[in-house]
Amino acid sequence: MTGATSSTAPGKDQVRGRHRVVVVGAGFGGLEAVQGLAGGGIDITVVDRRNHHLFQPLLYQVAGASLSPSDIAWPIRSLFRKHRDVRTLLGEVEGVDTDGRHVILEDGSTLPYDTLVIATGSRHSYFGHDRWEPFAPGLKSLEDATTIRRRILLAFEEAEREADSARRAALQTFIIIGGGPTGVELAGTIAELAHLTLVRDFRSIDPNATRVLLIEAGQRLLPVFPEDLSAYTRRALEKLGVEVLLGAPVTECSANGVVLDGKPIRAETILWAAGVQASPAARWLNAEADRAGRVIVGPDLTVPGHPDIFVIGDTAAATGVDGKPVPGLAPAAKQAGQYVARLIRQRLQGTDTAAPFRYRHQGNLATIGRSLAVVDMGRFKLRGALAWWMWKLIHIYFLIGAQNRLSVALSWMWTHGIGYRGSRLITHGNFGRQDAAKKPGKGGHSP
Image (cartoon, rainbow, N blue to C red; front, side, top):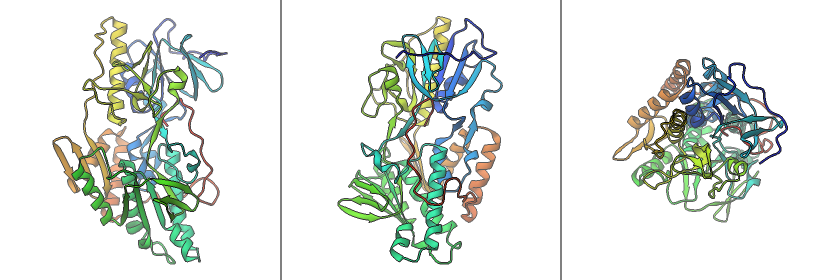
């Protein structure tokens, strides 16, 4: 891709003639790559369309009013303030000039690179039904989480003053589409919000009458987990009051609800957790992509024909040394970022051994509700309260900064003790739950 008209000025601490690495996206993979390269005599520029790194595994807790946005996000600049060789830019990527080795930003300026690392993550996929997005928002960003929280809380507020019983029932009906970890976690947290936190807050409605429906087109929840843990998850959700509907896809979403197996279900809050697609990186690079739009990369995570371009995380369709696809999980992105940083340093030192990327699977975890979770680590499996504690400890460990770890730990202890969720704030936008559709992000970020 060509046509760049201008270039950005170098950072004041960057040295002319040093190797230049541009990292697009400050998610898990991009962050690991930058941290692995910092201090190595390399000029590093990280560009993201948002100014914060986001701990996505806990987004659903912001949506469910358990945590505040600041508990799970950190300004990118603050993470690299001690590294004078790292420059952070807020910007959105429009394309890549692979011949001239420039990243092209939305304002027409360019970033020259010697090595490019693309770690732009993924966004929602509605399987060809993008018109559903205004009615069924997904959960990939802080904006998504606060939008969902707003819709959930406003549904109860509107139901409180609604005289028509049919519409009141629709307002108290919540549909989650997709039975993976995000769908399971959203269903559990909404059920507990209604049945525990809000149960004494209203006078005209009974929060216990709230219906939470979890719809999965497949035959079981959590398909990447063993069948016994999937079955346990379904039973645990049903004990929380969640209605689990399996084996049929949703064929229509609208402001009135969904159509499932030919039958309409009226609901005024629908949430999407069914699928993702990659950022437009394949189009930027004119590279081969899989059906989800992920760039097909080689064993060393480079783009075929472009040894100077790495693609990692959810943006990449990578295959492990065992022949299995590398999953789109945070640990996989972190390992890829570490691998790329190590490989770039080896190349500059002339010691590149060309060892392929080897993904080490660390297990799958999903929380269902208060004191309920499932953990799958191959031969080692847990369920129930012990799995929940393990899930909590692992997530607290991976949070950035002692302040955030303490804040999240205290919030969880409070919520676990009395079921109270203090982040029930309705913010931004005009009154009304149907927000305008958000356009999919163009890039330069981890959506």
